[in-house]
View 1 (cartoon, rainbow, N blue to C red):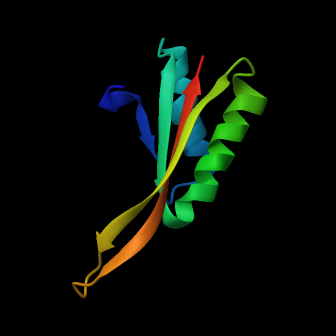
View 2 (tube, rainbow, N blue to C red):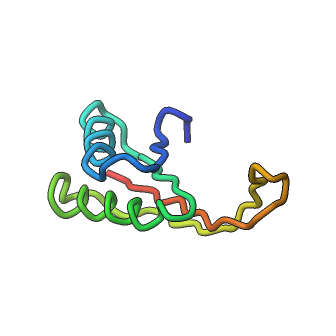
Length: 90
């Protein structure tokens, strides 16, 4: 999957990510991956469900990968952060 088909979920409102996914699908992309870490995981699930239920109803859920990433914080110590990747297929 190419890098332009990945939507990184952060702290913006949910609808801005929904718009990004719908725009990519309308431009002919058949597969979009949502990536999120930590507190943004629930937002990524919301984006996937809103796109599937309200905008593109023939969209299918692809693979869902969960993992733990080690992130170093400002103090220099490492902490584990949960991560999720959700693939949406047309």
